[in-house]
Image 1 (cartoon, rainbow, N blue to C red):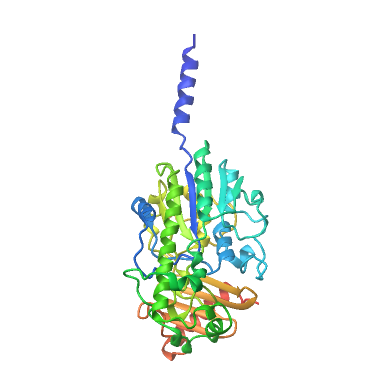
Image 2: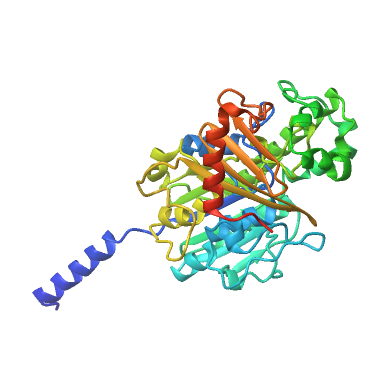
Length: 416
């Protein structure tokens, strides 16, 4: 028979255990090349489900409009140049992979006792074994359909708290538009680009060089109807990505899982006569979707209209799970109160092996791009949301431009 003291000790232990907060599962779902500035209506019921259950950010930006360096910022919480990934990591590019010694979202959650999984596009070097980056399970190859099915199956098997990153390819398949354009049907409500190639006359010459010598050649002769088909096809790819999100969400209990939805960077969508991505820093490329849903969403609601960037993701994912990002970061934990940023610093290094460094400062109203070549762009986004009037040579903005130059130089020196 238990003594009174034993009964009291047992009751105390039971109460203490019951009061311990349950660790939240965390899902980071990434698309590839999804702009926040979509050119027409899309049907995204699964994304809508997250929006309705969470917080949709209105001013989220990629740290750089390229796959590998943007992903390095997401994983490490650092600016790409500090993470060591300046440009894309593949045989045709100049990029170097993310160092396995670099703390990542995976290593943080693994050390906290989470089961960690990575599914789909990695693009950060190091082969298929992601154990050094903190992921105890990874499945990197296959179509988007196979990737999300594998992720959903793994999630259903987990008994302990888990953290998963699911990274699909769409709408990156926009690169197949040259062969798809003639078979693509125009979608109702898709808008034509607000500007065309004529707009590049007052822009840095690198942008026209992209059209003449790089991937811009594929669409240089596009008619207005073909650009509408480009944008229609893109909207269809966004809907296909949403279907993949639905497959993963079918395995997720939102009552105890915080879901973060985002992408690596946007797509130029034919604005200024430009496709895909390249040496330019327009809003279509830089503005990205970011939605946070689930138990942790309430903690970030007050910051949904602030300027946020991908380097914020790592410390914020930690905060959403009740953890603390313990290493250096250029981001902020959006679950913690703090002053709103006045500006963001963004960067670009090279298009494959074509070095074309750019430094950018983005405030709520202005954007200033400074190319290593000396070319500059200054846009008043309130008066000119489509970025058609380059004010860099306007004497009325000389003081503002000098201030932006000083801030960029204080942030980092020109990129060699």
